[in-house]
Image 1 (cartoon, rainbow, N blue to C red):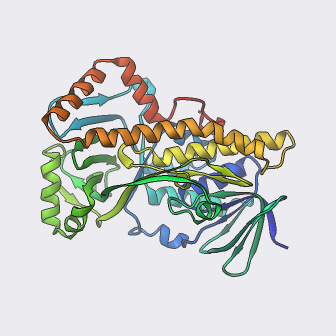
Image 2: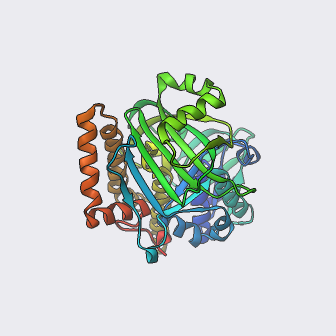
Image 3: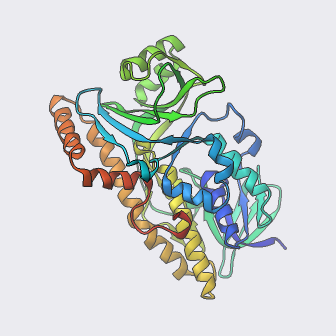
Length: 404
């Protein structure tokens, strides 16, 4: 017999492991299976990516007990500045002092370290990694997965948290709307002469956004930011092949003297950009969370936060269903999760896709129209408040775990 638990979470990345910890805090047991080796995932040179953690997501981390471990590594985002190709017409989002920051920037490695350490000490989490799932079964009374070492895992509900290329989702036959933006995101860390003053810069060019995201100062007091630079797919190989000097020169062309003299503090990496969204996020004894359900452009930094809202909603409906005496895999329970998440995820993804296309329009007229619209928002406090609440993740019906 296998070790039967409440949840079988396939995918132990940022969203999957957060789900496991959130479920455990509510008394739900789970198996977590991931094909990646945790030691590899937490190597300093594994992944230079960083994530903006919204206010709502930070509430989730606090409520599942990992905020204290993360606090020293987060850089507050006090303001967001939006520019169209460094032209006049800057749009600023700066909350009032009593409202707190717009979010926090973390290196993904630090998020993984905090999640993995907490998971190791949680008795309700059985962590299987590295391990591959070779067979999945969803029956009338439960689900199971057979691992490549022959281990059989059993649970009441299967959750796919494997990311954009989710084998569990594809095997279940979910319909997927997707398109390729034909762009890649170039990721690198920068040291710079001037302090960033906790400002996140989003500079839009026809080829895509150029984002400078504030990070904590380095060990010797170096001012640091993370760069996410979108380039056309056809140019990506050439950009990656540039010498450090030439690469820095291209960056300086796009950011001017915003942060003064710059140097690289990490290796360069790149990731293809695409849009994908499932028509539904549940099936028989199966729920999708995070990028398995919706993969989006990083233009607004909301991808991980959207997945963390999935986590909060799924845990809440499961706990409520259990309180009412329902099976965790009950169709009514899962339907409530789907209905709760459908509108929010569609609105965020549509807005992100629309921004990507709007700022990708070339020509002086398009630029003038964009800057006119930005100046209109700049002069309208109600609109600015709406956009800041969206950035914080504090709009709409929030799950209990995402509330303060």
